[in-house]
Image 1: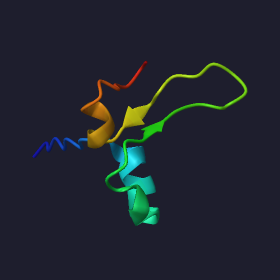
Image 2: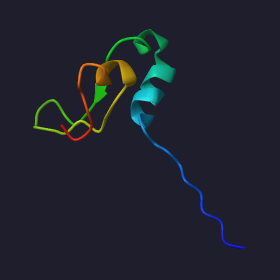
Image 3: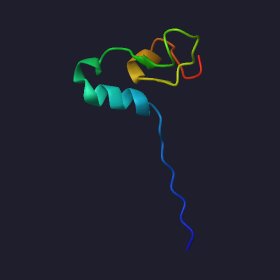
Length: 57
């Protein structure tokens, strides 16, 4: 029998940071590349998304 598993990784990296530091839970945060080079936002938490922050910005 073939099984298909779907794992929704939406907001995963932000969720890990909020788990490690609960003070970030209600603060808009975005996870991206290095400070020295231009980077792309890989994910943002839901409070940040209310401000229009999205992945791949």
